[in-house]
Length: 483
Ligand SMILES: NCC(=O)N[C@@H](Cc1c[nH]cn1)C(=O)O
Ligand SMILES: [Zn+2]
Ligand SMILES: [Zn+2]
Image (cartoon, rainbow, N blue to C red; front, side, top):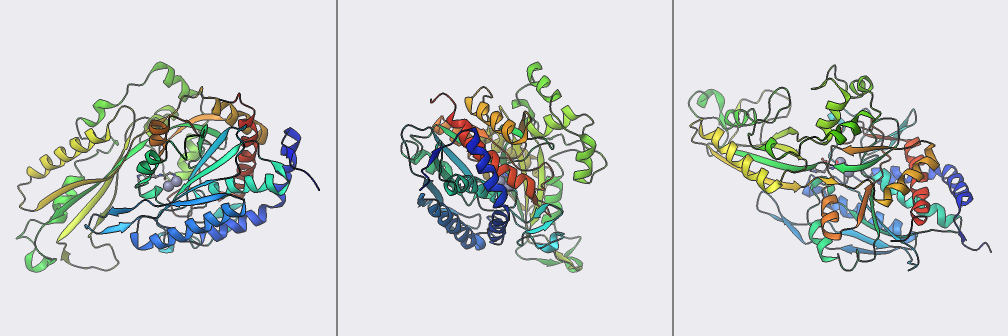
């Protein structure tokens, strides 16, 4: 009977061959995962998140993992209702005290998606077209989570000893701000996290066709700005011209936030931003980033800035403010002539060093009340911040980046770019501050994957080569001096 062999360079060749041979099964499993509409933006759909977490837990159990579904308790919703949060998977495979321990973070919830939003294919039916796997969650983040599990599966199938101990922390609320996970991290810091040496996250994308290692993400402060007027919706013909309309107030308030060049108009916001250093400026110059290709990918004729360096800086290390929607406004088709009673504007401000979310909340709230007061409207304004996540920045001299670089070289034959990410992994900074562990992001998503957008996809190549990258990463991590 073949014994479990220590992985050596040659062992990886066999593992890579296995991954290539199993790729259709891996795609089929991603199809099954994408079919679960685990949309965390809608508490009504949280049952689907629990179902997705159970499917994930069952998969880890087939790999011999011990799985705990850690309870996060309840969350108070904006309407005052208390809703039970989906649990978090804490899992570990067989442990060998002689080996370093890697904790893999991921999430299996997704952003909303409806065919009528403009998808070419059904968002919850993974569809392969020209080598791309289209479906909500294919890239963000079900594909990468499955790729980690398939990397483990490959070692086991070939009876090759996994050279590191492996733990998983997999949540179902990342896209809604990872509610409750910060508390769980603190509670488990001296238990689940105590023997962890490295935390790795693969919940982001490359910035070009070149593989990358990510050493920073922006944070995010998400705001609801509510304007409530008369006691019920009103006929705009009968009452229009006689009352202060909540929607008009809201539009004016939203219009006071950011100008046409993307500059945030809340005076104090930009004051806290860390100044750009000469050393940092140089880092942007070396990054592979094709401006014209990006315009084509985005379907725009121009960006807010004209150079690669400015674009990357404003995506990664400067705050940005985006307006996302208006709840209570009439959005269906047709010509409803109503003055809405209450509308809720939603916007978010990406956070960068050295912004402080609690300060940002104060600044935004005071600014919006000041703008609203100048309208002399009798309507009521309420500002809340349901999500607040700090930016995360790693030290690129961390040994984990050496292992990441070597793994990229093994699989892709190139040196990875060192990049940041404009999006937010709400828990990343919390992991760093609470556990003090080494944290690195090892993305396998393509620059044009369209996370959160219509027609989100992951290429079959990135999914399969990414699975090999994760397998190689286990090996390279084991080759580092044991911390
Ligand atoms: N792939 C990471 C991601 O998309 N994260 C979300 C998390 C978030 C931030 N505010 C609300 N959710 C993101 O939008 O960056
Ligand atoms: Zn996302
Ligand atoms: Zn994500």
